[in-house]
Each structure stands twice: as C-alpha cells, then as structure tokens.
Length: 236
Image (cartoon, rainbow, N blue to C red; front, side, top):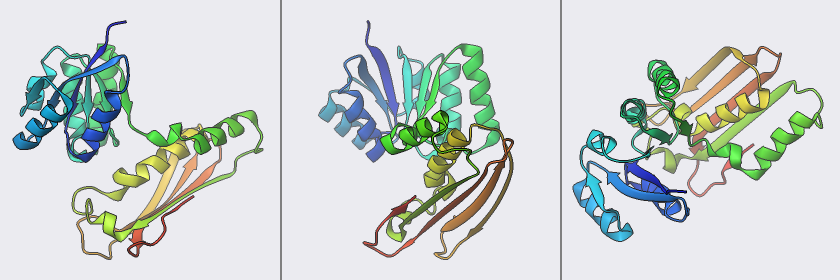
C-alpha cells in the first residue's frame, strides 16, 4: 500500500502534536506544512524533516497530497475544510468542524459530491471508558436510558488562552455534545441553553444546556472555567 501523503495546516502546539503522531504511523507521510509564521515553519520543517513549507494554505492544498490535516484557529476550520474539499483532498480537522451551520452544511455537501472523507477530531469516542459505556448501552446492560448528564469544570488559567478567541461550546463542550449524541443515538429536537461571563473575556466562562431527543432522552450539559489555579479538573 502506498503511503498516504498528508499536509498539516497550522503547526502550533496541537499541529506539532498531530505531526509527531502521524510520523509514527507506517502508512502515513507528512510531506508538507503550512503556517503564517515563517520562522515557526522553518523550525518545524528542520526538526521533523518536512520537505515542503507554505505560507499560503491554498497553495499547499493544490499540491500532490491525499489529506489536509487542519489544526488552525477554530474560526478558520470551515473555510479551510471547504477549500481542501474543493481541491479534491480528504480532510482531517480538529474540532469543531466549523463555527457556523452554513459552513458545516457545505462541508457535508462537498464531501458527498466529491467522494472525499471528512473526519473531525472528536477524540472522546475513542477513550476506553466512553467506548465501554456505548457498548453497555447498545447491549441493554444499563436498561432504558432516560437521562444523560455531562459536566466539565476547568481551571480559569486555561480559559485565558482561548476566552478571547472562541466560545467554550466549541473548545470543550463539543466533546460532551458529541458523546451525548453518540449515546442518545437519536435526533435532537430541542435545546435550551444559558451562559454567563464573569472574567470579562469576549466569551462566557460558563454555560448550561438541556437537550431533548426524539426517543425521549433528556440530556444536560454543564461547563465552567472557574476552578482556581491548581484546583482539580472535574469531568463526569
């Protein structure tokens, strides 16, 4: 089998994590990287032996690649995924898939039209505890599911890195939403949500949502970024 030729868009901390993992996979070859920071591009290229670097993401998409791995800022995900599909590339994209419904629907449409795969990095489904919960639900070991509750409490220090950049629904809540949809295995019919801002950042520090599904399941999702420094994380 020929190696899958991959280009990584965005080589910040998470982009370099993707690169490190991909270089350990026998059937993958990262041959190109793209980033606006030229100094960072050169550093990463030299450290990991990447032959091709691009300041212009679309130029990389036009090159001889099979997959574009999008690890840029959340607000750019939709635009870059659409461009990659238009250039005939498969797409792996860090969550969220997009920050607008319009972009998400266009990605879905292009994926079907072009026959290209799109996978979002919702990693929680692959964690053993959540996988075993899903299997138990499918086997009926937990009986009929009436309510699903998800809660995330994180340090306020971490919030400083994205509180001015992206809504926490897209940063952390997206994992819980994905798990809830997976566990419920039904169409969501109604959502009620509230949020509150205490830190003065552009986006709120906390939100709570209630979701109802066609099969009768009710889910609640809570997320807050107010735990004091060095306080424990609380994920349930």
